[in-house]
Length: 236
Image 1 (cartoon, helix red, strand yellow):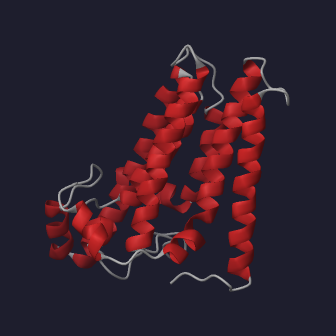
Image 2 (cartoon, one colour; image 1 turned 90 degrees about the horizontal axis):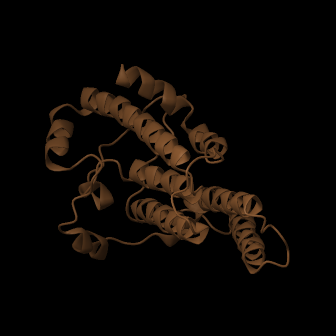
């Protein structure tokens, strides 16, 4: 059942993050009395998720697009961050979605979004694991025995990072859209909550900071996108 759900979710996984946005608007009991704590904690959790994704891509990138929207892999990659966690990209996704959910400052949102999307990504992982086990057999089973699926093994992580080349161009080209996606959604959720608090005014310093942040991330997105399409920046 999990593999079936995972194969379905894999086909439409690019729509999972946008699907979370309406859910973060769910009203409910507040996480924090002061909204600033929810926004700050949510931002830190989302940044942790982006850091995991960024480090994974910069050290050893795996093409996760599949083939014909189905799970597919040519090689069994076990180095880089994958030597410490079998699914670091999905760990990053779960953290980013959790961060935006926390920013809503709604218990109903947190108790809906985080379990739901954790389940969906676990189903995708089950589908990928079934495919990889069928294709690679014992080497993959040995990899599963040695490396945890979600909770990373931190031992030797510093050495792994230090001994591998950091591909920053690849990081920018592959992740600029993801950065714009979650940051703009985080900003939107903050703006929504400021509106609920009656503070959505251009005279408010927090609103001015939101506008500045959005213009900055938009400029980043436009710059990298332009350089990419003009082939002035390519993934190395």
